Amino acid sequence: MCSQPFELVVRAARYLDPKDWRFRHDASICIRGGEIVDVVEGIARNTIETKQREDFGDALVLPAFVNAHAHLDLSHLRGEELDGSNFDDWLMSVIRGRKAPPDLVAKAAGAAALDMVASGTACVIDILAQHGATLEVAKAIAATPIGGVLASEVFNTGSGNDAEFTRTREAAEATRQIVASRSVGRPLVAGLSPHTPYTTSADLYRRCAEYARKHKMLQTTHLAESPAERDFLVHGKGRFRDFAEKLGADFSNFKPFGGSSLDYWLSALGDLKDRTLFVHCYDLLDEEIRAMGAMKADIAYCPRSRTYFGHPIFKLADIVAAGCNVCLGTDSRASNWNLNLFEEMRHMRKEQPNADARLLWAIATLNGRKVLSRALPGVPADVTTWADLNIVQWKGGEVSLDALIEACPPTAATIIGGEIAYRR
Image (cartoon, rainbow, N blue to C red; front, side):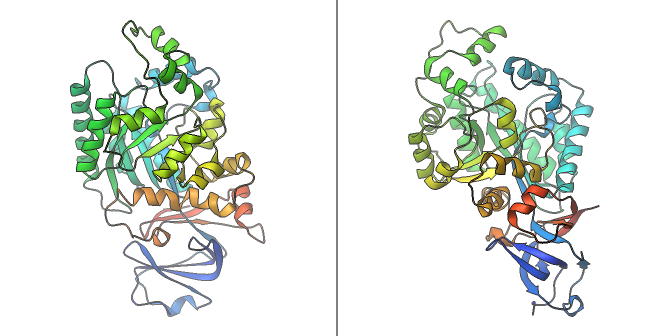
């Protein structure tokens, strides 16, 4: 019998228990303080004392998703209307998109966050680019029930490391003030996102790492997204240089780093190599995978965005075997069709046909929680007990982990931090 009293008891025909990825039948999920305290099978729902009771009948209760990498401020763009095969044209479209009216950008970002909640996502690690709409975007996301991190993006624009870091610190502080008053669901906190090794100086990387450590912030960075990145860092040539020269960049005194993205990151941070969430990591050599495994690196994998740009296949089996923690992200609407993580899982399954279904479910849920547990205050230490739930209707008879991924059933309700955040 469940302990008494509870704040919320959710009953459904089946519950996918992330402790062992088995289905519990006729399950009553007992919640207190944003945590699942107990799950009881086959008990009359009215025998458990609780402040609130929700019976979802024949539904399935699943762990809610964590979107480990998004750019919500690009939600007014549409990947299907852009051309991922022509990187220069795509990037110019994004640059123009950053100049859209702030109210349009913020409204689209807030709507995208709500759409994620309505498709079973409880938390997001979002990259908050610095432009005219930045604070309005942060306010729009903070007005939704979604939890997670708003990571202020930083890269060198030519104004010098001092100016860039000051701008980044001020943006992070402004974001912290915006999210401080939230009191629903999971916390939403500020973070930092040095853009990439080819756009962020070693000094700026290190300053961001020092600031993130001091304020216990999550730091995330794009890494090894494509062979073009390696070409530029190792040899100082290729697509990235060609594009920068079109924009007027002066390479007369430029000397390439001479190593990979990972080499650059390691050399920049020195003894400040606190765990960072790396994004993409499609162009990794075997020795680089082993090095990241030795660090127990966290990596956000965005399958549909990878396909959109034609990047190398993500080496999931090798990366997991090395000891990395892989999470699932969508990237932005500028390189994706939507931000639905069920559909992202389905695409991941097609790219990784030999992967264990339990691993795919962990990538979409628990592994993102592990990253967030280092940044969000007050979350349960055991990530399997977070009361973040995605309740879906299931009409397909017998259910399996793979059948769920293939079907992408619609969300009937989303619970975040033990509170109902969405109900269809």
